[in-house]
Image (cartoon, rainbow, N blue to C red; front, side, top):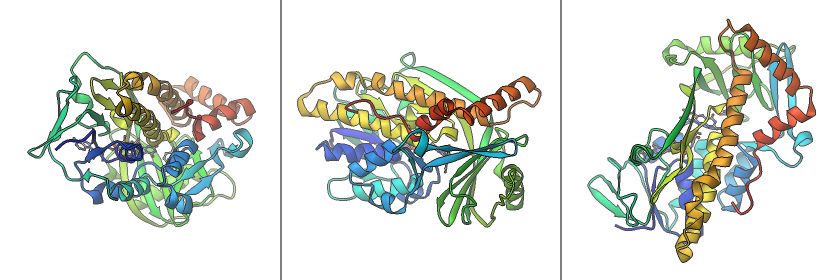
Length: 390
Ligand code: FAS
Ligand code: PHB
């Protein structure tokens, strides 16, 4: 078998890359180790930046998102017994976010790729990358071989692509956090119109949603927490304790349909390329989800990689491909900082660090009272505009 681009992974990065390349007349084959059903039901991100929404609409895969997604024009920071709205419409006029589950984006992209011209293979075992430093790399899987010109490693943090790069090539930057998130999906009407980020002595909590009937919550828990420690009644009691902290707010409860613990880490591998292998999305970088950047960064990488590959296959020019990693990393590190900043601002750290706690409160007071400070949060949250031509 032969294709122009072998894409490892059918998450948002791999699927969007395959679709955008198809629109530019570049062939690809997507190799995914999980089943279609698995990737379509996996509950992950929920917030799409303005740029991600615009990208999906421009690529012709934003129809259902435009119908079913929930545009939001602000978020609330809740602490010290008060709620403070960060009003996007005032601070960053014309830019907003859309709440639309990552699994819905994945479904829309798979549907588009299974049209004629698409080639997405699920339940593929033993993917291995070969000759990635040569100009004729290839991929083996399940006893088969796929020859190609380029390999896109879109296989996430635990994938096979990044480890295929020889030792000594990559510099890895990482930061771990002394907590994790317990994610909860519940069949209950959201208790507020917008997202609520709540900081308190008991720990961080996030009120989000997926639809007018489905709410999404997160609770800060210890880093190695076992989800079995969290029966439904304990989840509701803790969510109430952390969110019902302002007058008049009552949290509606209902049937919990999914719960899981997500580790919190910051990670970047530089450079995001080696020979004919290009890393995009979580295979190259991870952010704590507090800033809602993970999925959106994957989209930004894919936009850059698509333009570079289209130029390469059009006339062999390698310049954009040579600069791929540098072109992505400015945005990657901006999102890394914002995600680290939101995480350190809103989570409860070591209770002995009284000084650190005062710094957090002071910063929150500043962000909720200064228009300039609130604008820095708003413009990063809705997503900074893409660089020219990306
Ligand atoms: P993905 O991990 O989504 O996709 C990689 C794909 O590659 C997967 O389908 C995997 O099965 C496949 N794969 C892996 N190894 C392979 C191999 N050897 N062969 C073939 N295929 C292979 N971000 C937010 O913004 N907000 C959130 O709330 C949020 N919550 C998250 C919760 C969890 C549990 C996790 C793990 C991540 C969360 N994220 C969140 C981040 C997440 O949304 C990622 O940023 C996003 O999925 C990135 O997309 P991809 O880069 O495509 O990687
Ligand atoms: C979500 O709805 O899953 C979500 C929203 C905002 C975040 C993280 C996750 O910062």
